[in-house]
Image (cartoon, rainbow, N blue to C red):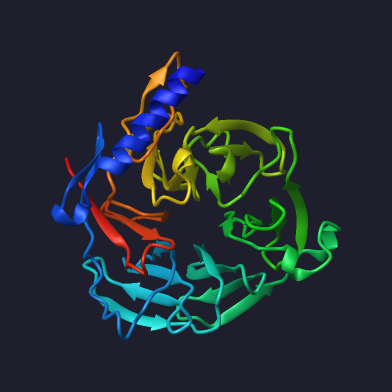
Length: 342
């Protein structure tokens, strides 16, 4: 982007951020553009905050029963399980003070969870009701780490064969590959100045949308980008998302969804939104953000336009195409639900 255009977009983003009233004065606003527009419900959760508090609402998944599973680093109840109407069904977990990443995986017909705890410096595999099945400690065998505190895992992605990819998003930015038993196979990424390197490798997912060329998508959040790798760690390319501190990529159908923690030019200003990309990695909608604009096939800088979100951290898409948005450091609010508008 040219300097003049960058300054213009930054100024517009700042002005929009400062000028817009709180969404609390509008009931069920319409968010997004093109074929991805949604009605917002910020009172979806029916949980009693006095009995079932949350701290940072980090990530969410849906199980095959249709339940929505939320992970929070509040040790009074690390996992809250809802139905789609927002009714709280059950809770569990008191031992995950750094609960951050949550992945669900169908293991030979049985669903299991993978939790990344960035204070325990571990990845923990559990049943859906919290029974621990496996713990993966810091990867000392790589030679990259001298103590557990250097390893701060934020996300996992699980291959159909059970291989586990772990993103060390708040540590040294490596991606670890383990087999299903927790044996280290490979590691790649890490910090540096080459395109293959990462800066805040916050999320990782497996992209099977092109069955001929499946690959990994990894977040490089402070570079406002996703990066693609082959399963052996070979770098493929970078998907730039200027202005957007993207969190983990979540694929549903032909689309990729990601919470944007904050606008790059408004760091620390509660300037997040949600972005949606199509199969060709073109942004088609920004919920609470600027309309995507391409000039000479290059994406212009994106930014928050109206303050519907503070610091979005994850997107969960249910079986009816509703979205659930978990937020970090946003006043301990429960997740919001967004219903598609046809």
